[in-house]
Image 1 (cartoon, rainbow, N blue to C red):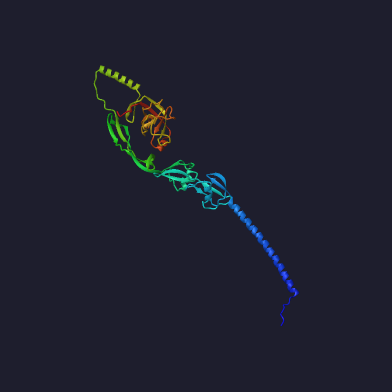
Image 2: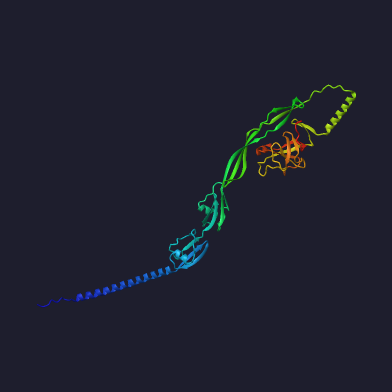
Length: 388
């Protein structure tokens, strides 16, 4: 038997050559594409390596700006390399373990140390805030009511500054004081001269004063009266003084005696006419001069700027103290004012010139209600007249 030989045709050979050509073309394109991709990857790697090797960093420390060139990846490594130290209370805009990028801006605020004294204790504290107000607000320290802080809240924080908070507490208490009654002498025509009778017994009044006490850190610092009111009205003591003339005794005298008596009587009348003598409120007294149409006003220690000490050194007292012009009424002299009674010149005033008198009252409302009056004033002297 003979060997079987496969039949090779012209078409089969042609088809093999076409496949080889096509494979060669596809393989060339793949190789070219792979090369392009490899080049691109290499460029990216080079750019990344270049970026990682050299970064620009903007560093702001307490408002001062500086630019750094670094190849470090973490912020902590950058600060360590640049020998920039940090304190425990300093603040950073980024964490030390954060990775930095080219163009990053890092802000470092240095903490200031200060001492704070409050509530009986002194503490050392730290802050990165600019003012005292911002610092105590961030630290959670409260100012209440009337509390004060030194220096003020808008003061700029500086190193080792000493700050003090004073706790202020106000309390209002009541205090009662006795009001002395006045002794008023009145003429009683039903009683004979020299007879004295108590027509009304005197009774002191009671005044309630409202006192404001101010405590600083628990200790009393000051106190002042912020108001007052009369709880019990004063009842004045009234003394009736007899003015009825005694009956004249019948006297038989010789002519010569009568003549002498008549002469003496005339001399006494002439002498009485030469003296300034009058009787007011049942009191006979001699006065140095009488001033008519004196302008009368009133004042009170409750007015701003008016104290309780007079120009003569005494304490202002309602029912006694008046302010005068010393050129008209000497300081320390007693006077009698129609409708008011006896008063003593103890004070002066810038507006009290000439025939003017300012009458003192404890209550400002009473002083204002007094208004302006015109009265006759009898200038007596340094001794107050007493009942005959």
